[in-house]
Image (cartoon, rainbow, N blue to C red; front, side):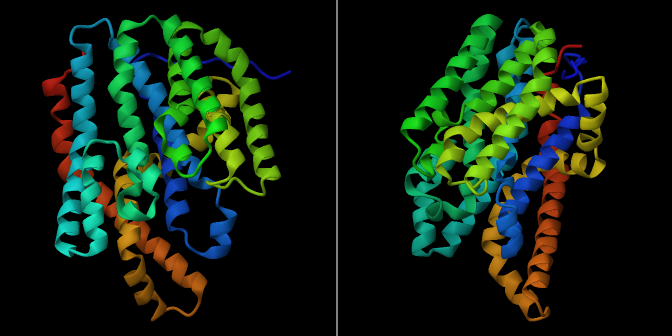
Amino acid sequence: MAPRLSLAYQSSQHVRAFDAFRGYGMTGVFLYHCLVYPPLKQWMSWIWFGVDFFFVISGFLITGILLETRHKPHCLRDFYVRRVLRIFPVYYGTLAAATLLLWYAGTPRTERMLASMPWFWAYLQNYKIGIQGWSSMLPLSHTWSLAIEEQFYLLWPLLVVFLSNRRLLVLCAVASVFSFTLRQFYVEWPFAYMFTPTRLEGVMLGSALAILIRSHRELLERLVPFTLPLSALGLASVAWTQQGFHLQNEWVIRVGYPLMALFFGSVILCALDTGRVGRITRWFSEREAMAFVGRYSYGIYLFHWPLHCELKRPIFAWLEARLDTNFAVCMGYLVIMSALTLGLSVASFHFFEKRFLRLKDVLAPRAA
């Protein structure tokens, strides 16, 4: 018989494990993109799904914030002000820098990219990239997931404020079923991977967990010891039958997303357990190195892919002139790219983003 969890979660607490969760998710995405040594690249082809971890975390945390503040004056205004100050400065700063560089380059490829930039400024690039493919917008194509989250931020707060918890749970279930069903009829790559209506399970499950942990905690305590191993078994079954958990695989697209959402949601709740399961989970989720990466994960996510796309060739040429083996060149590249990305992300946070973050408590202070 599976042990029942005992969840301890205060509405306003900062869960340190969530920083590490972001760190693990970001490390997976970074290695998937920048670990270019062929044998390791093939073996680690599954770690792209750190993005889905971010979706579940966003749903859980954003819905929790909204539930705690929805009865307070100006709750929507304050929510949007705080989100804008966290997300927009570095995102639009990156777009502005990319626009200037593309304009300066002046090649036919960069001109096509410039023509598509309004989609990025409007947070609608996931549709544009899904239709045209990755290659036409390569340096910024990874921002498709940020577009999905921003679209979620735009509509979901209104629903949380004006609907009851029961109706929100029904909506989470209906939206998840709709997303799953839509992918059974439309599984084309890459559109099904980044079309917002086909990627709802992660944010909806995270949102449902935020509601249930405040209203039906005992239900979660009974279910999670079963959902964690069952979802892990489901993911392993898909990987076994499909010879890997590859990004473009049809059955990964069809059934992998809800299994990932269920697994990551269960992991989040296990970190809140006060018993043996929680101690084991927190041992992994509270590693200081992962928490450090998690604190700068937004900048790392924004910067790593453009740096990789634009600097891979010159860095490889420099390393190949000095190192003897392909393995040494690839590992040297990974070290250099890690240092560049992390250094730029830390500098951006402390010298640029913090200036806007300080305005949160001025323009939208949280109630004591």
